[in-house]
Length: 476
Image (cartoon, rainbow, N blue to C red; front, side):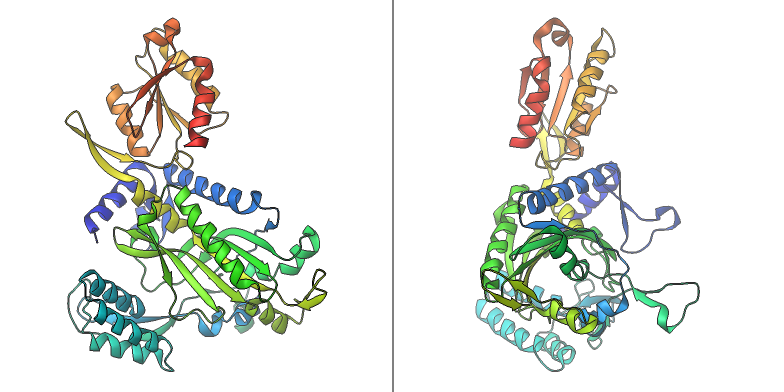
């Protein structure tokens, strides 16, 4: 793990306006962050790319935007009231708290990295048994002690017992707070889709198989909340629930596994930095579950989950609401409650992954530069536009080109400082193209367009600039 690299990335995020600590002037609030000017553009580009690929590119997927506040029985039906817990353990030396299951998983990874495959396999088998034990916290604690797993921060071997913590935020509605006024901030966006299943089915004229997609905020009272925007108490999810005929869920599960992997690769993430992580103990609603993990500077961590949720959610909502979730499937002539395959990707985690993957340092003519090498389609700023000098009509020509490109792209005009410094500022922002207007431009030779990654410069006629940028951003 490279904490130095991670620290450099978080420092750049603040310095360049990607991410700020929330309420910073008051000392901040733990595990909550605000997106700055560059960060919000990056985040919006990821959202739009996901929505396009998930909704617009499929004729059987519809979108919804459900409310954050929902009837409290929703969470009783979903199982969150009774089962939404994390097994946590405290290091008495550092006073820090950790997920017990993650400590063991990281221990197994270290054993494999050292070539101790047989021992890793043995611990993995014990870990699986512990997760399925009647008293899971006690079994996890026993395994941590048996393997002498030490505190990641202190190096000490002085643990408390493992305890279960419910992670939902509770609040009150109405003028008077009473027992009947308690509701929860939603801990996931999926239930807003399930309770609207029949509404979408009735109004959109879709048939099984079909999906419902949503991007929205969720809230979890994370006890172990750190690692920048990787684990926050307020975060955003991009989820799609795909409803299928019972017995066909395995095929749909494999389909969405493949498609979701490809989406991350298309965003510029190399396959060597991604891996599958199969759940040893799927959640209470799932018969199969797998995560896509990315190799962050802080280690391998989950970015997206693909889950075969069976008919658990719709069946439970039918039971608790009294409303039928069965459908009539005309092709088979049968009635059933659909099974569900879910894809759930963390928007904030995706942004962090892209930040980590894009960050690099190199040297040009003896001078170091920091570059955010985002794929052009998700880069916050697509083009930087510079008049070489602030005279001779260069700023006016540059402003004209800026206005033309702004009709379609987020671009940035800059006339301050040397051309080298302006390039460096755009490199740090992840801008893939820079356009310079010089005396040759005024003489009819066209503008100079510089590529962030190759540093190659080409001359392009003024009336071809818009087409050049569009082809580069969409085709790169």
